[in-house]
Structures are given as structure tokens and as C-alpha cells.
Image 1 (cartoon, rainbow, N blue to C red):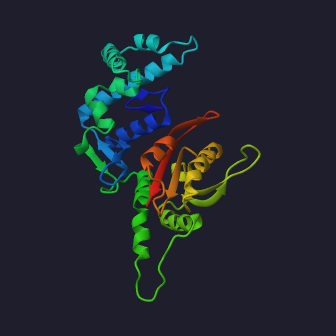
Image 2: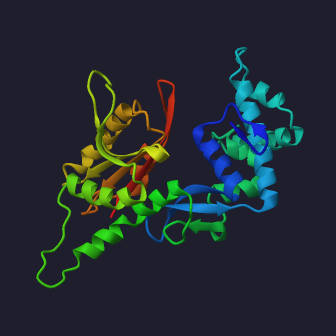
Image 3: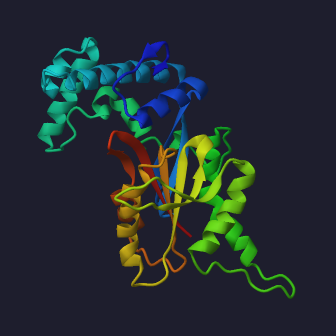
Amino acid sequence: MEFFDHKFTALTPSFLDDLRNLEREGAIYSQFWRDDVEDFRFCRIKFTPKEIVNYVEAIIAFDEFMLLKSHPQNYSAEDALTDISNSKIRRRVEAYNDWAEKIRQDTAYCFAAFLGEHLEDLVCGGLDDRYEFLSETYDQNRKYILTEILELFPESVSYLKNERGSRPKFELYEELDVRDLLFSVIKPVFPDSRIEESTSKFANKTKKVDIVVPKISTLIEIKFVRDSRHYKKVANELMEDIEGYQVHQNCDRLIAYVWDPQRLITNREIFINDLKGLREKNGRRFNVEVYIKP
């Protein structure tokens, strides 16, 4: 794909998304842990013109490196780095690799090595004053409107739980309750969204996706943590879902939305980190995001 008048050939979809957003908005999006809320939050990272130039320069070199590394002659990472055309970035990566080796950190040749210290801090969460968290600010990108809906959905539930007059108290008792209410919020914003859609066959059986939003190639799978016995099974259930949903034609982004009303998942950070990230199955690539609410 082409961005900033350069054709990229070896980047994963997440990098291409960043380039697309950077070209359109001068910003990229990320997800960082927030100690104040003990949860992950999505944020917008606005770049200065100079940072955009430096970022694009670094990612062009990284794309070239990844292409060389996948060469049929089986280039090693060291050979691929030697052959990239940008000598300034080559020296930067070499210095980073030396540092990583000294502290016994297994991050040699990672994308951060190509960025340089300032941009690494910016995109990896090291500059707190540069981040616009989406639950606190508004953005026009439709993909991230869905992110805001998912982040703020517990506020809608909390409002409905307020007793008013003689009406019965509103409660979510099972996955279907969460699915139906969440779908009722998503549908007006994304009119093409669908509920409980079957995938094509995987391992001789089909699986039903809770919510599909085709326009932004997103699937949402909902889990309701029922009790202390069930919470131990939720991660395994989601792993099985991830394996099955990759055959769905709209699966570029799979969101696992875990409703944990009793807060039985004690270490949410570990739970999320074990499941989230880029997946590649049978030649298809998709990104897994995980939310645990309330």
C-alpha cells in the first residue's frame, strides 16, 4: 500500500493503519495502561511535522529491512540491516542492538530500534502529556467511535441501574443481556452492524459471532463472567473463539468484550496482555483487542 508517496510492501496491518491515520490526521492511535483507572485506555497521539518526517523515514527503513529479511536467499537480520539504504538509521539500530545486548533485553531489530529515543518514547507511552485519551476527548475516526462506545458502555449501564419511581431496577444477568444492550448502542452509529452471525466452517463446525460491524471489518465477541468457577475458563473460551473467527470475511479486528460485574478477574493487565495482539492464521492477519468491564 502507498502512503506519503511511498509504497510499503512488508508491513503488518497495524503499521499500515498507523500510516493511514498519520497521513490523514497527523496522528496515530494506541492503547496504554492507566494506573489511575487500573485499565487500558485508547488514545490519540498527535505528531508534529518534524516527528511525522522522522517517523516516516524510520518506517520506510523498517519496511525495507523486513522485506530483505524475507528474501528467498534467507537473509539473516544482520545481513538485512547491513543492506538497508538509510545509513543513519542503520547506525541507530546497531547502537540500539548493542544496548539491548548489554542489558540482556531480547528486543534487537524491533521497530523501536528504528525510531530513535524520542519517537520511541512518544509511541510507547513515555510522554504522558502528549496523549489524548479517547474516553476524555472526541475524535471523528469511525473506527475509534466504536472504541469510545466500548469504553463508555459501563456508564450507560450505570445510568440505567438508577432506580426511578416504581420502575424495576435494571440489571445485566447474562451474555445475551450485554450483547443486546451493546448492539442497541452500536447499531444507530454503524447501521450495517449485525448480530449473531455465523462464520464459515472451521474444524467441521461453524461459530456464531455476537456482533459484526462490516464497514470497519470488526467482530465483537462478548463474555459474561458468571462466577468464580467460570472466570477461570473465560481466557480458554476466548482463545478458542480467536481460532475459529479468523475464517470470517470481516475479521480484520476482533474485539473480546468481557463483562466482569463482580471483578473476579483480579489481574486484568495480565489477562489482556495474554490475549491481545496481531494474529496470523492461514494467511489471514487480524488484530485482537481485549476489554474487561466494568
